[in-house]
Image 1: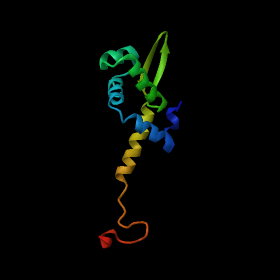
Image 2: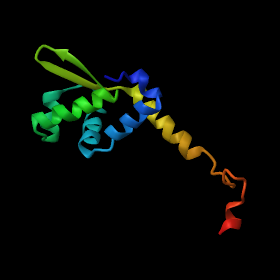
Image 3: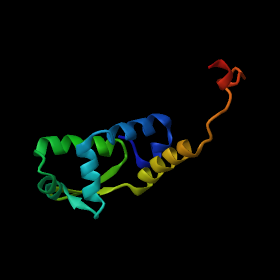
Length: 113
């Protein structure tokens, strides 16, 4: 299982971004934005079969994006804000990085066209 603090590695970041690439998982995160929620409440709100919801929650847990706390037979889930903030900072850094005007060989890109 990947801990939220391990999302700093490229492999963990890729796993987290992959987990976010599924619409149902994004819907789960959107639901959890309101706060901690029992799996049964998530299931009812999203109208997802229990076995499918369990799979999606497992993927989100293993990617370090949500945390589950057992309460008797139930599990309460919450978003791991640190992990999401780190992923947001990765995207921000990529978006803000200036595009190079020359390729690695040192040739002007416009001259080759």
